[in-house]
Amino acid sequence: MARNHHYVPKCYLKGFIDPSPNPRFPDDDEPRVWQVEFKSHRIRQRPIRLVGCSPGFYELGSESEVVNEAAEQSHGHLETIVAPTLRRLNQGDFRLETEEWENLLFFAATLAMRVPNAKTALESTRQRGHQVILSMLGDIPLNQFIRQLEETYPGESFTPQRARELQHWAQENDDCRFPIPPHKWIGSSLKAAMEAIFPLFYQMNWTYLHTDEQHPFICSDDPVNWVDPSISRSSMRGHGLKSRNIEVSFPLGRSLALLGHWAAGPQHLPLTPELVDQINLRSIEQARIEIIGPTRESVERGLIIRA
Image 1: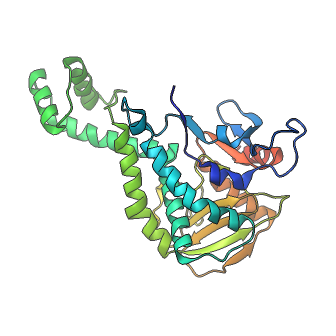
Image 2: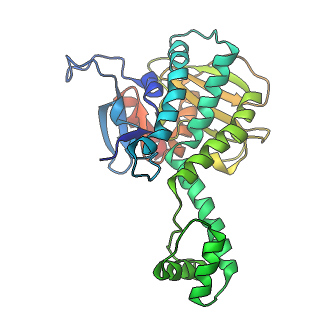
Image 3: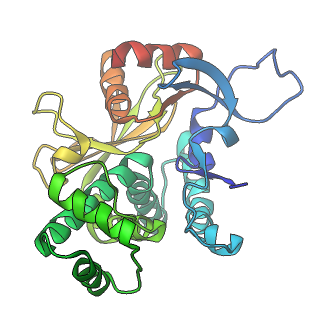
């Protein structure tokens, strides 16, 4: 049975745990958050080990368990490094060394690219690329099409049935899917985080956003997102990080978030409840699977805002 892999790390989720005692679990000190799943609209308090995860999400398709766990272990190494920084920030200690700040921004960059939304976007891009390549092969005899496939995709084998499906897909734009090895999207996501996102994050100005326990920040299965607030209902992946008005939202805990921007700004900024709702809305709009928060009221409000 595949192990649960966290696309939202447990060390990050600890910033959103419910601070109040729970009479349902008087002898259980396991950290818990509130979660609402869009599929069922079910709201419940759950241990963080069961939130923001999916069985085998980072598996590499190998028969070796060691190989299949390699990506999850790699993420875990970075999480171990950044966990103390997240904890200190949520406790109000903002005295970070340069290396700690760099690690935090790299963590944010990888977090933006390791989630279900990023996986879907990368796979969709690769699918379109495959379709263009296959359509260029044209309507040729099947044996020739197979030979062209094997030349185009060295190391892969194609049965006649699979080749016919791909040929039809390229010509008719139907629902056939080209097989994308898991390591391809994992490798592409890490490459994007390292080479494209982190360098821009490092160049941006960042502001700590503060709120109180009565109006907490929430997060989702897509915790790091960017929008251009000058464009109505803008989409995270529809506008580039180099855009002049772009803002990167990264909630760190129930009372603290980071805001990245290109313009000059203060280092710390207390928010009104209305502005907290705006930051939370960015997380909610990009959520694909779930909303996560420290209280039942916070995730219920998230559902209302989303509607």
